[in-house]
Image (cartoon, rainbow, N blue to C red):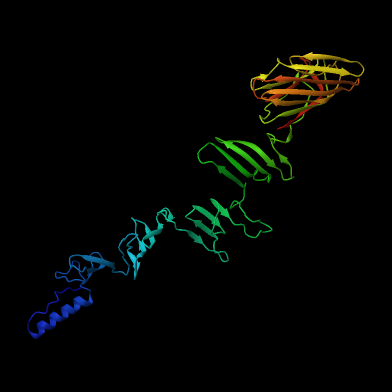
Length: 395
């Protein structure tokens, strides 16, 4: 380490030689020392052994500029987007700078393009019209963000919607777009509206059942809406509006009524089928409908006629009558109940009392107080003892 004032004073030959050697020692050691040289000059180099850095005196000779560490590590000014700390000759607004502690950024033409931080890498943080493109081996636009339209393209540099996937050639094993969990297990996907408690789930039914299922989750409670089984069967628990949906047949072998509840609001026509239904009493078989307030037993305007071994007719204001029966009589047939407007329903029925070949034809009208959601068959308090009942629902 050596420093010198770079002035060779007059003296004897040996003194002058010693002064020259000291000056040369200061030069070859870059004026190294624990403190700055006493005499300084513009653009003078100083190896600051206390800070371990190499410095150069500024043009005004009033401050030091740090160039690099003495172990070879390069040091650059923090700079800015318009004047980066590290730039290229002839292009002073393009290079690398430090926006703040523990960050570096790349700038071109004075605009930040990429920022690297401790938690993220951000492209186009300033929101400029600056696209981002990833090129593949044969696809120049494997991934493309169009800043001017705020759209993302896969395989295209002209996305026409928020996310645009240009389908590549189909694969025999994975199709055009292949989405799968990284490991084994249930493959399910989620559509979430970003704030409400309801969300849609779709995909594999369970880890072992590969049926396809669509369900809705509300506050963690999941309800199934559609299932396509591995055998090709389509199951819709709540029915399909505009199509015929069958409920589950119910054995009419006990109880005083067979009820079908939770009928969807979109249903406009209900067909109830009777298969060899009988009771242990003599009251008429009849149909009643209802809404969320319960089954209604008033306000029906109906009629029933029968023919065969005997003929006759009857009316009712408490139900849609289907057939007059005695204990052990078995009846088969159906009644169709159709929504004509609002909450008003009309009915027509054809039922055969099979044991004595008497046929019953009926019809009527009933207006509910609210939307229909239930229907039942009764026998005036008598107990059912044979047969089964089911309904079809249509929207």
